Every structure is written in C-alpha cells, then in structure tokens.
Image (cartoon, rainbow, N blue to C red; front, side, top):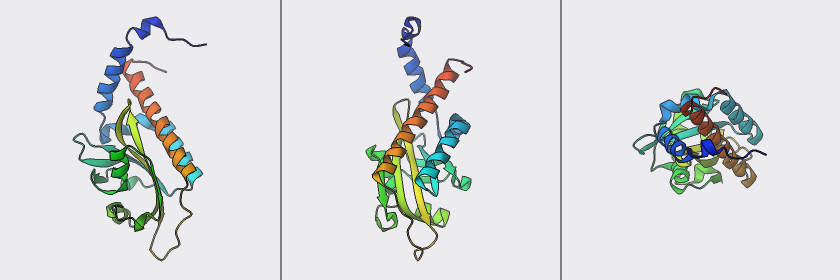
Length: 190
C-alpha cells in the first residue's frame, strides 16, 4: 500500500501554492502543450463514443472577459475563437459551474449564434462542462453535434449519460494538466 512520504508531506502546502500560482499563469496560448498527445487521444475517444461532431476546450482569458478556444477537434481553425464571457450557453456553464446538456440548441434564445456563424454550421446538441486547473475554475469543455442547414434533420442528440461522460472527461483533463504542471515544478522526468 502506498502511503504519504513524510519528507514530501512537509512541503505539501508549499507545493499546492506553487501549483496554484503556475495554474493561474496559464492562458489560452500557454495551454497548448499541457495536454499533449494523451489528452488529444482521450478527447478523440470521447468524441467517437458520443458521436459528436466537434469537441473544444475553452479557457477564460487572463482578464476574465472572454472564453477562448484552446483546442478544437477536428476543426483546428476554430482554435483562437473568442466569445464574451457574458454570452451563450458555454458562458452559462462557466458562470454557473454546472454541466449543461441540451438538444435543439438552435431554438434556445440564450444560445450565441456567433460560433455557428464562424463555423458555418448549426449547433443542434451541446454538452458543456466546467473545466478546472489546480481546483480553480478556468474554462469549459464543450461537445457538439452539428448540421449544415435548417432543412437538414437533427442528429440524435445527447443524453444525461453522455453529459456524465463529459463531466468525467473534464476531471481527467484537470488531473492530466495538474500532473504536467507538478512534474514541471518539481523538475521530474517521468
């Protein structure tokens, strides 16, 4: 059985502070290398499992005015897209720190159409889960099903079970980022 190392435990509070400080410095541009291939592999697997058309990680910018797409699968051109933190369902998930799962999103008056216009597609179904780094809210992971025109049939949509999968994905991604930060802070080569 693994137990805490007393020599390391003495420094736990200092390590936690350093982790929080490092996490607070991560902006959308710094986030790129933290999830690496393992994170992208997990995102692609989740997309396949949920039959999603796209999945994105949105981080709040440093002054907390916009959410910025730091990762987008499969559409890399969406990376860097910004949405005001006061608009849309993604921002609602951020502000409320609650997961959202909604089908027929395009009928919701609170849905920001700006992302749809940028992608030239219509968001039909959406899951949005808050994303944390070092225990602090930093952004949102979103998963969508899309269609090309209003005349096209809607995709099958998402379920509460799908939402729970994205919630777990958010936790896994936080742990991966925390691990990468800790190994860097402690200068570990694992």
